[in-house]
Image 1 (cartoon, one colour):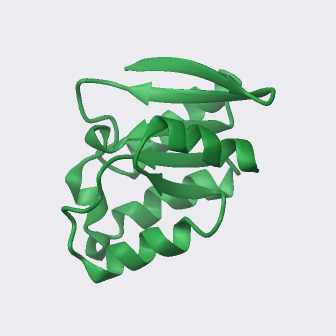
Image 2: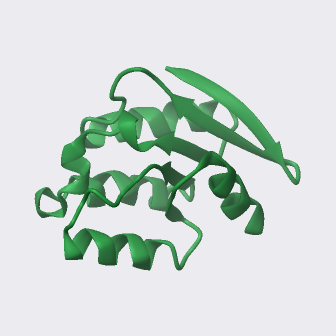
Length: 120
């Protein structure tokens, strides 16, 4: 796992990347949250390819379990990727509603993620 630091408007942002899936379950989410928060970040960008596809199947509640941890600790979490292959109405509604706020967001590029974080 690599952590790239971005700084926008004096905000320290961690961009997480890896060749492997980093988030497989809620415990991985909690571990990532603790690791990143301990390093002084409270804004995280992660790429869709680093999250298990099961995350995007809302019926299993994995997304809710993981994202609740980030919300509870007030760590802004932005997922970068192409979500169009997921044709689930409930997932599309979830993404739409999440993107209305600033806590959890789904965007198509790192540039867009940085802009979203800078807006807050």
